Image 1 (cartoon, rainbow, N blue to C red):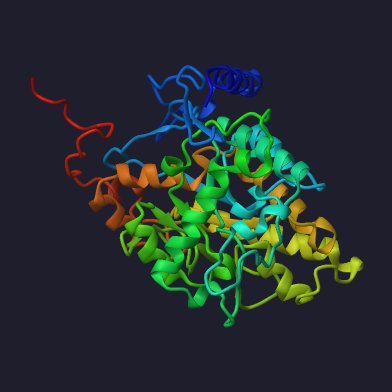
Image 2: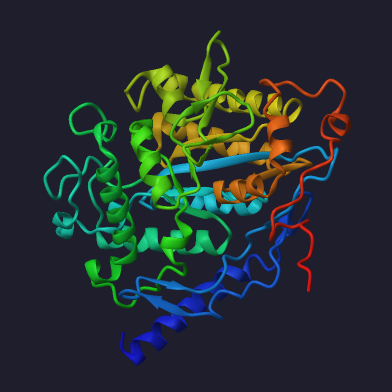
Length: 420
């Protein structure tokens, strides 16, 4: 990169960072139990290391990323809630920017699973070589320059505000005919490599030389994903483990404390009560919709409010079941869509506003959750996993978690200092 271009890009990164911090000068999460603020991290823009064609740059540690702390013996765990978004991108609905605002107003951070093809213009579609499909094929299409510019802005600001940028891969292929459920480990590795590449080379692919870069190294930031249609988890997890991912959110769980599977934290969405029904429902807008209006994305308008209230109340029942019970993290998944008149977006917003400001609640990204899980005493987590759905310790939290913890690993808050 020429020196003049490097200076210009650096100025744009600094400007973007300054614009972000104007509205978030302090990080209130830093004072909360179990999640203190990061200390000593360089401010974004004070470090500047262009990567590749300058589409991304390393600007230092992510701001507003809490430093995890171990639970003390007998300490009640926080109630974690993760709001995550599949195929995150900004379009004319402006839902990405809207929920960034909702999160900031309610002391929350979220995970945005970015689709790599949202960084690739339609005219360059043949650069995408999907497994088991011809070059340039995508079941969710590609993007135009305005869509890429708008998505870049939201991804940039989201990361600066402490949110996580994961991946939802690229072409979103489902079903038996070349769907992700049929892909091999090597095919998953190819798909992941291409998702990274499109994020790291949008400047070359679009010719948008004046747009500010993304202020992070995606190779380091990308630590987890959710597969399309929750298919292909087995081989994806094998590939992800080999590539250094730390978690997966592609399965279906009960509301119990998570454990590792194939070396990754299994942070799948969960089953929660479905008001008006005897069975439980997955914590995702699409699944609520299918059980209400089928595959018709715009059903009976007279039922929109009722369907949205069903989702809101089901998620809240699941939340309070954990909050008053075993304190298992609640994982919620959504799409930036206006299905059934946008009723599911209203439901999610209502849930964010009700739960994220409650005492002992942490509305966090998957990144923050796995940081916290990795910092805990394994014996404590094993003890928490003995609690069933909605089960609070009969003898109280102090007695339940009063055992003497194992020594904290080196480098984790609470570990003994190195001997000189």
